[in-house]
Image (cartoon, rainbow, N blue to C red):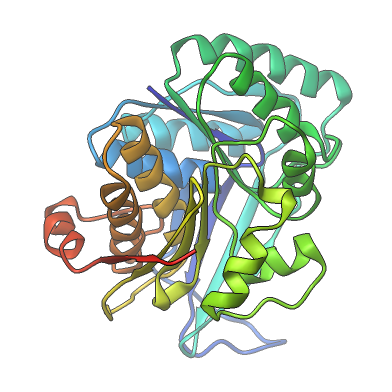
Amino acid sequence: MILAVTMNPSVDISYPIPDFKLNDVNRVEGVCKTAGGKGINVARVVKQMGEAVLATGVLGGTTGNFIVQELTNDRIDNHFLKINQESRNCIAILHHGKQTEILESGPALMPEDGTDFLEKFEILLSAASIVTISGSLPKGLPSEFYRYMSEMCRRKKIPVIVDTSGEPLREVLLHKDKPNAIKPNITELAQLLGIEVDQSLSSLKQVLNSDMFLGVDWIVVSMGGKGAFVKHAGDFFQVTIPVIDAVNLVGSGDATVAGLAVSLNNNVSVDAVLKTAMTTGMLNAMEAKTGHINIAKFKQFYEFVQVKKIDS
């Protein structure tokens, strides 16, 4: 079973307002509300791929109840720590071909909430074959919280994929027990190392050879429409994808994590791991709803993904 963690879930609300007017009244039709958060998107795509998944994290209030109901309607098993605060809303205003986002920060957790979740997490690990940890930490939890979770996974020899950024990612990477996989983008790499990072192969190879990444088995650097640059077990790979008609790019990184988790869980070849991860990311971008793929198109677009090994 894949255990998908979202520590700061949300209800994602989309307002399509083609003629959005600032400082005026805007009326909206066709409002879309879904259970959101990066790990929840991962869980949704894993489920659509036909794999067993359990969504977990921290939520509360009527917003939290809505998230649980949405997951239940999608037949996604879930087991969250319930708190006495309201989970957040994230609003996207779609206008003039653009997207303006209004993101609530979410609840501020108490230290005991963090302790309670780690106790729940350890119990849930007993049935997990791989873990994904995605997104931001809620207020109140220390930046090393994901490091604690990663350590727990490694002690139990359960592979863990960490998809976050900033100090939480730095804390994970500075510890001797590294996660099995991470999925930073170029900007996140630059923030981690405090240097300029360009998209040339030579620059990326130099960056990924940094001591910070020693012990991480899979480093998948997402590069949008250019695919990905990957380091695995000392080898470098350039993964290219075809031009697609993208409808909604939000959640494509989460879909990539889902494909990575499923393929690693099934012990497939390196090429198959990378092609699966890129395919699920592309398929999400081709759908209007975030965290959704059309599995019927999987085989077709899987064949379009090219994996090339680069000399070290």
